[in-house]
Image 1: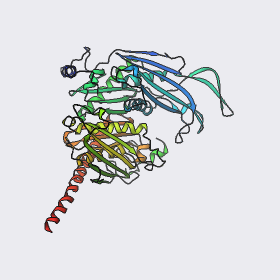
Image 2: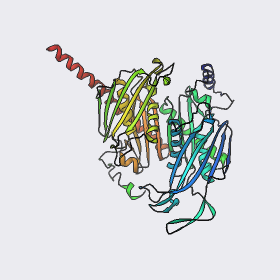
Image 3: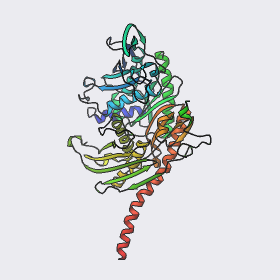
Length: 263
Length: 249
């Protein structure tokens, strides 16, 4: 928790929410404006930068060859890493990933993995020996709250514009040919985080709101409206009734985002 | 559904280890098992064998981590190298870091953190043997260890998973069901307050299946909650017996 926000301010935020109002005049269950830029890093196989209000996240995708896991010899590998880089917030410090960045990476990873977003079976080059490894690197550039939803959206956008060089296999060696192929995708999961402040459920908390948030629940929803990953966070709790409400809210919001982004 | 999935539940609805869909694995809970810890607990949940120890409230080390207005709870979930089929490196993995965080956040709502400013409580969890559902068993044991340390609590925290195996929603997944099943939903719960303090999910569930899984997991939690209370009482029953026999002498 940050000490940069005074108790008076925190109380003001929480009283606002109690009355159904927010600092920036949004409704309790509205997202901030979202802008997505795709293909912003030419040297990466795929990339996307998202602006969610003042939150900015850049995701770069690199595709390399590597060994498959022994239990899935015919499948490519997906790995997600998140960096809370020090330029993104006065509260981020240089150093190895802390539990917040590890949790962020694992939530984004689970949403993609459990919904089978990447068609990993099509990323096998030579069974048991060589497959494509898709590195998804989440780079937080400006932290103004709701890093989970912003990162998950940017990661999916980056994967959707990822292109792999065409290739052929000769004597077990990979030969690059001309042209590119789109990374094979099977699903487009959208993760919606529902926060709880004063027993009110809110969407898309900004940084200051996160400082008074009792708890949050992030729910990944696929295009069929099924739930494919859930993570509760923060030191508070939810009642069973609130969980039900949050899951309905997440589905509605995911559908709304899907329509808006044309996913 | 492929072949390996078909084998997890037979035609009579019986699971690989002989359980019905809504049946828990056998549980054993013990409190006060480690003399040096302020509080400790041991849980056997199916083949899971887990030790938890609590220290504090005590002075924070390093000191700069202490908070002026509340107590700090720290949790470390750690798996022994021999706890799984292939040796696990003792260095903390990303999974362990995440689990340590969600376990801490599942226990914090039970504590009166604001009553013990500048202090810390450390909870150490060692998974000696893992067989699916270790985070849940760890929470159940950690809550007992904290209670055993004499730290006031709003309620015990108890955890149990439900999931989907072969199109059936089932309670308390073991290792094979966890790995081969369609979804896993671990839930931590404070029954007296009707509060869910941990909820995760992986796999794919319809909204209706998700709701049923959460309800079923809460049902499992309520059963384990009774065993938790029993385990706490048992420790003091033993003390009482000793005192009484001393008086007789």
